Amino acid sequence: MGLSAAPFQMFGPSHKLVLFLIVAVPLALSLLARLVRSASLERALCWAFALIIGGCWACWYVVFAQKGWLDRGNAMPLDLCSWAAIATIIALIGRSQKSYELAWFWAMAGTVQGIVTPDIPFDFPEFRFIEFSLFHGGIIAAVLFLTLGLKMRPYPASIPRVIGWSFVYMAVAGVTDWVFKVNYGFLRAKPSHASLYDLMPDWPWYIGVVVVLAIASVFICYAPFFLADSIVWLRKRHQPISSP
Image 1 (cartoon, rainbow, N blue to C red):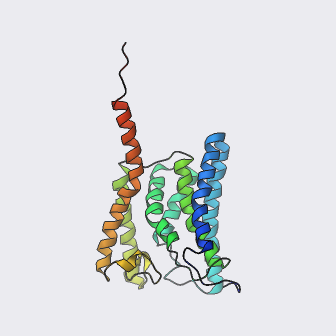
Image 2: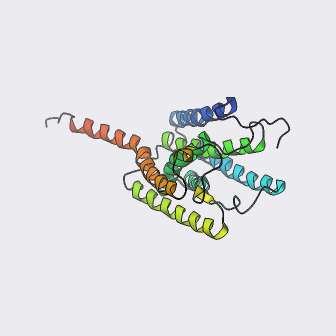
Image 3: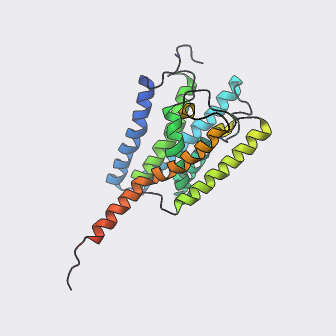
């Protein structure tokens, strides 16, 4: 813990700045990429995002190991944001459509909630605040850049794939929680910090609520693309047919 670090203040100045940058940075970089239209620039930005996410993850392990903070409840990459990070890095480096789909839905439905209600004890400039903000914010910013800057997007077929992989994640996390008595995915207990779980019923009933909300979130995250496709379809339908 840094000597000058104060307890984390949700929606305090540091938190608000992080939330602003998560949106502003990918918007600016997306505009730059569209204006310049350079494959080299796009590749460099993708690698920069990937290195930031991967570098933060590596630093987390190094610092937590040095501080003695690592345990079986946090050392395994079995929280949803870790899976979102892996999918995002693969999408950034390989432009994989299926990895992008997972990254989009998991980042928008899960990582966004994590950065809005972060589980960190201290504010800037403590290490955990910086690492958490860069890692989780980097995932969201990278996915926004892939979407707005590189014009990647999910499709209707993405929805069942993402739901299926989400159940795979729950199964893996659930088995791990049962075997090792840990709490990945918050499947054994609610998080100790303030979150949406506070509004849900007690264990195990909140798990059913989470499943319903997760499926609903997938459709909500797809809604902007559905609306955009609908507008295009309506315009084409009402476009006058030119005579031969």
